[in-house]
Structure formats: C-alpha cells, structure tokens
Amino acid sequence: MRRLLLLRHAKTEPSEPSREDLSRVLVERGRQDAAKMGAYMATHKLTPDRVILSPAARSQQTWQQMAGAKAPTAAAAAPDTKTLEQIYDASAHDIFAAIAEQPAGVQALLIVGHNPGLHEAALMLIASGSVDARELLREGLPTAGLVVIDFQFDAWSKLHPQSGRLERFVIPKSLEAASR
Image (tube, rainbow, N blue to C red; front, side, top):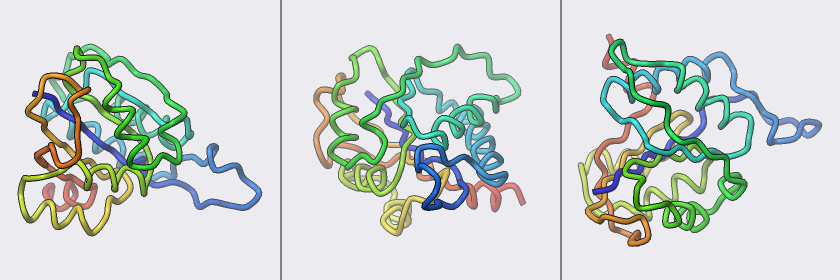
C-alpha cells in the first residue's frame, strides 16, 4: 500500500505586481495553520518518508512550520526532503508525473504545493472514500488543506487516474472546530 499526502501551502501575503510570486511568504495565520497541521499529522501518525516541495518561499515555510510542530511523543526521523521546480505552478499532470517517478521504497509521500494543480490532481486520483469528504474536497482545497489518499499498489510507477481512496480531508477550520 502507498499513501499520498497533498498539502496546499498555508495562507500568504497577497500578491503584488512589484513582488516576485516565488518570494511571497506566510502571514501569521499561515504560520499558525501550518503548525496546527503539522501537529495533527504527527499525532495521527501521518508521517511521510519523503517530502516534495515547491521552490516557492510559502511552500518551504509551510513545511518548516509543519516539521517544527511535533506530537508530544513523536520521535520519528526527519523525512527525505526534496525541492522540485516542476511542483511550482504545476498542472495536475505535472504532479502526477512527479509522484509516479518516486522510488518503490517511499511508502508515504507528502507534496507541498499550490492550487489549482494540487486540487485537480487530488480529484483526478480519487475513486472512492467518504462521500461527504469527497464532496467537500470537490468544493475546493483551501490553504493548509490536507488530502490523504491511499493506493492498493506496491510501486508509485503503477499510479493511474481514479486509483486512490480518499482516506481523509482535513482543513484548518475543521481542526479548530474539533478543538472546541
């Protein structure tokens, strides 16, 4: 079995014509949401073997905040982390190709990137799972939203559309509601 975790970068400062898009950074809410998502992943044992990041500052910072948020008993080794240019401004097909190229030894893969590519890739890969969660995901993938998809194959090279089961879809607002 393989597990894919797709995470949209956390909330950033607005884009400005005078600023390069790659250099946009997280705002305070984004840093908090990324840390919450990192703690959630650690607590729920959603630990990737490999992390693939977009080169954009906001994706890099999202992962830094997430990696710094550990569960109280988490002692796992840091995952192999790679920055891939093709994840920035990627289409669903670019993301699909990056996933399919992963070595067989990677059981759980996390990609931190951008919409619309991440959202479209998730929709393209999911064939089953909770109807409610799939419907919520169809509405959109918000910042710091996490999509967890399980596959019943033994190598990423066997990836194909509609081959996954949506295991869960978590957004920062759902974490806030659960903690009340």
